[in-house]
Length: 616
Image (cartoon, rainbow, N blue to C red; front, side, top):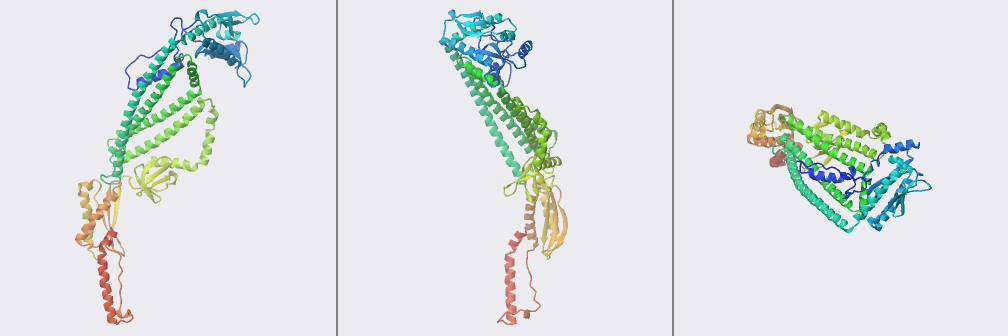
């Protein structure tokens, strides 16, 4: 009695996105051989091909057979016989000696060789005779094809199928007869030509769908490149504003736009990778279906399917799942921190920097955790017992903690820096005399870019005292030194007026947060009188404001005639007679000293602008 091969029910079409149909097509091609018959195995037109065996994969039947025969576990083995890549029936045999080819595999190989020789030699389907006879010595049914011995049905075979030996032999004979007729029909030139046309059509469809995916991927890549250009432009503007060229600090809107461009770029990158995966699936599925259309190549198709059903498929699945989980975790964290930014009515630049830093560190930690879990799952998928490995993680962690104490210190200090908001990416800090812009920060180290363009990497455990120059607000602390000969009250008034004038101007009012504080005389030193003034400004604007204020104050002092002191020495002589030059009289010596003093004063007046520049 023959059973027709079952086909996989295909889902009905519906409304989907642009990626659904290629994904559905490739998934149906890739998964159809796993859930049903092999690719390319179509039912016969009249009476069908070899049946599906309901007990082929029933491990409980094999276990019941062992218990009924009082045999130890794993003493009986079962294996399927195939022809042209199609499963026909199952044979059984006791387990052989370890290290040698199992008896059931030897039996299957012998049967398959005989079937292949009969199918390849060619025969008249009308003259095909499959007979079942009873062996007089063993009293077991024997199946012969055109008088040639094929196999003997043993009692284990019949008990495994839950039938009498003769009944099961009749079923196997019918299966073999129909399989040979089908194999002979599929080797006819007309059938092969028809299958070749079908294979070319499938490959043409796959090529067309792959070309559509390629065009879509190119458009997505162009959008991604455009987003990268916009991201770099925003980054350049942020760096320019951090340098104080145009605006005070950085507008939080720019930071949000930058984060939005990064999220859009991640979405596009995910779609690009999915399309690449779809293209690979399309070609693998199309070639697999084409192999299943011909009896000569169908065993190769079955070999790949059997190989994929083993540890390789599980390992690839775990790898793809881990890779997708890392991508999805990054997208989820980006959206989470973006939602936190949007909850703030007016997010500050400081908050935006903190959220960006937290997002970067969180994505790195999540990726590391997922890769570790994926590695354990991959080992478990290929049969490695990870129980002892997981149980020994505590000892492994203890050993790592003893061997990598500095790394643990880095991570702990990095967490404290983030939680306490000591600094974040985009801040300007000074650590042990080394200062610069924080370009990157994670749990292990902090990277600074100084004014010379050098990249400084500092482990977080080495950061003991940090000086943040851009947290909240900054201050211009100026000490202006004037000469003792100047009018002190006038100098104080001009110093304060210049600062107040800058504060009132709209362009500088955005940078200066509060009216300047004039503290008056701060020191009476050897060079002159020091006046102290404070100007509270936006973060990172103290240098630009100080430079502009010094320029304006110099012009104001020049107009008011207020001199800035420069280094000089004065010589006093009690009597010109105490200094004599050999060969000169006292009067000549006095005249010479007077001439030298006049020339020295002239030179000092010539050097006055240089001294003023050095003072500034």
